[in-house]
Every structure is written in C-alpha cells, then in structure tokens.
Amino acid sequence: MAKPKVAFFDFACCEGCQIEFTNYGEPAFLELIKHVDVVEFREAMSEKTKDPIDIAFIEGSFTREGDRARLEEIRKRAKIVIAYGQCATTAGINALKNHTADYRKEVYGKDAGMPHLDSQKAQPISAVIKVDYNAFGCPVNKVEVLQIVSHLLHGKEPVIPDYPVCVECKRRETICRYEEGDHCMGQTARAGCGAPCPADGIPCEACRGFVSDANQAALKKALIQKAGFSEARAEGKSRMFTANQRGDAK
Image 1 (cartoon, rainbow, N blue to C red):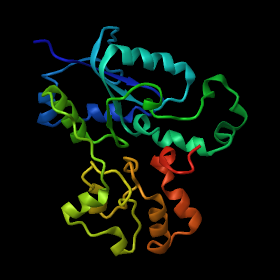
Image 2 (spheres, rainbow, N blue to C red; image 1 turned 30 degrees about the horizontal axis):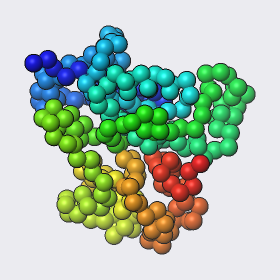
Image 3 (cartoon, helix red, strand yellow; image 1 turned 180 degrees about the vertical axis):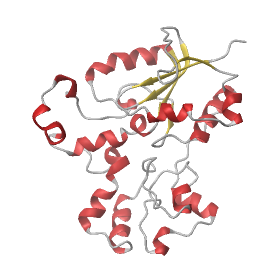
Image 4 (tube, rainbow, N blue to C red; image 1 turned 180 degrees about the horizontal axis):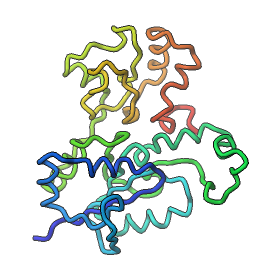
C-alpha cells in the first residue's frame, strides 16, 4: 500500500513552523515518517511536485491577491488541507498591520512604495480556500501536529481543542498568574499547548489565538482590575496573536 503523500507550502510567514517540524527528534516523529511520503518541503528538500497530494500543510497568511490562484491550485490537488501555525489559522502576527492605517510607510519610510512591499489585509488561509483542520500556535505544537497526522492515517477525526488554557493549568495544578500578582490571557486563549508558560511562571500570551467564544470584554476587565493595566494597555495587550479575532479587527 502506497504511503500518503504529504507536502508543505508557505505564504506570508517566517517559516518557523516548518522549521519546528524539522526540529523533531523524538522516536514518535521518526516512526511517523515511515508511514508518509514527504514530497515537497522547502525547508528540508529541493524537490517539488505537481502530482495529487493526500495532505497539504499550509503555513502563512493570505496577504496578496496574486497568491489566490496558487492556494486554489493546492486545494484542487490536496485531499486534506491543514492550516499550519497561527499565521495560517488566524493571520497571526501579520494581522497587526490590519490595525495600522499606513503600515508600509510606518515600517519602511521612504521605501514604502517598493513593489515587493505591496500587500493587502492579512487573512487566514480559510478566507480563500476550504481548510479541513487547523494546527494552531506560534509556532505549532509538535505533539498536536503528530496527533493530527496520526489520527488521519488511522481514519480517526482529529480533535482540535477549543477550550481555555486555564483548563490545562488546572490539570497541571498550576497556580494562577493573577494569584501571583501577575497578568495572563489564559482565560480566553485556546488550549492545546499543555500550558507550559504559566507552569514556568510566564503569563499566557494567547499564541494559539482565542477560543471561538472568547469573552474579550472580561479579559480586558481582568487585566485592568486584577493586573493593574491601564485601559490602553489592556486594550492592546491581546493584539499580538489575535488581531484578526478581536472585535475591532478591520
């Protein structure tokens, strides 16, 4: 029986999620690649293919209309499309520019008019093509990606967490950052990472985005009343990874 063909593609991103995939050294990953045939992966191989694909991982956000045709072509070739990493799932950090009137001028100054800087609003891959599954995170969670692929290979439906990081902190018996006089966004952040940051004394920054029904007003209130943030700081705190998921997204 032929191995499923797997390919990786990138759009507007740092390609850090692809690099994260090459960082696997665990026996689980080495066992996994015995069961799939990686046919395209720019960070690790020079070969490319135009053949049909069983699973396409797409990293990066959609920021150029010129990329639409390429995305549609990938969708036609792939049986399953997985948006891979926060830029692909919600537009991630790239979506920060959606809140800035003239981001090119502010970032590049006199060079703002250069053709290669011409781009539009950052959007998730799902804004252009049908996405079957999302692998959230900046970067993605290694274990979660392996589980998604493993489930697909075994004909199981992958389970993508849609509950707050606070749930995982409770499971780990981690003391709440607010109890330590700190701040945290775990009450609205999507779980699936295992909550390593709060367990290590670091506030959750919602690098996997918000849960689908996030109470953003309550988060802002907690940051002001419990963490002592100013209203402006509380308002802007959650933009880093969730700019497209906020109520003020343009």
